[in-house]
Length: 343
Image (cartoon, rainbow, N blue to C red; front, side, top):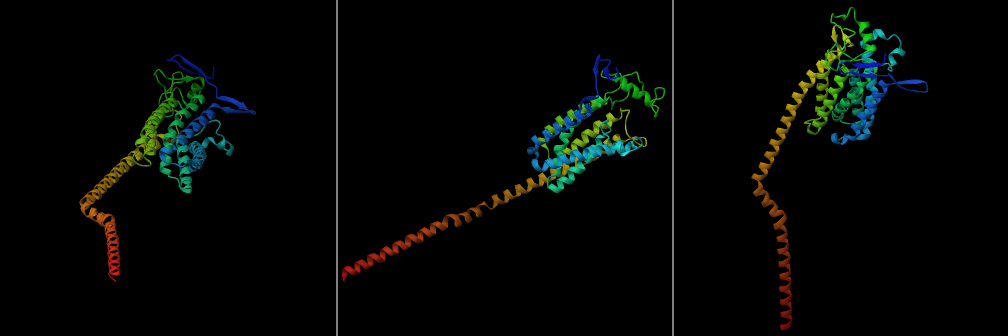
């Protein structure tokens, strides 16, 4: 019964096993399998669409591999720092099979590592980040289902039709509440369904992927898609994080909500500034081009005279000189013949 996840209002029940299979005595969790599938699909998309961003696949491969490693390390460090009291040994810190990866830490770690590699390989990091923003939407949309199999990342009570519950969810709620109250005084009842926050974020990321993939063909400047991803994900995460019961805190502030808010503000500001700059540059280019064309038109008569003198009149003059030389030669020859006859 402990593995049953149910959606009471919909009448749905799922037997959810955390372990997918066992290899040589090592249990492989569904969480890990889903994360791996998410990364694989994201990488396939990246390499199949690299031409759209004028990226070299060989150089990009190094950045992708480094980004994955940096992402995993960043995600784990972020989580461990926020929950340092739960990790006493180095073995506890590196054990990620039970979860404990923070999305924002992964994003920061992945992009910092990829940036360094791009600088070394002389690869445009802005173009790579644009493509990565689309790929991250795919990866996060799929990866969030790992939370479903772990029965985690859920929210507060809800009476909406898609509210979910399980014995593990109920046990967790009982462990963090006192008489149905959280530490901050908010009510959280163990016997009432909760928000499936993993599902909300998955849907939000699918929508983000569709939009960014469509807009990538219309982007105005390098880095625009990346900034749009940061803003899009931050906007959704800010509200979804407000529902969750397992947030990481900085004092009394939810860490992910704070980061999400900053991402939205920074990305929106930069998008406005850089869009105006891009438009101004294009306007200036168009103005300069029109000026050059106008000056060319004004001087077209002089230009035609130059062309006439250099490319048309000169050959004619040469031909006339040759004809005159031939005519003089013939005249002298005839005179010599006539003189000879007279003698």
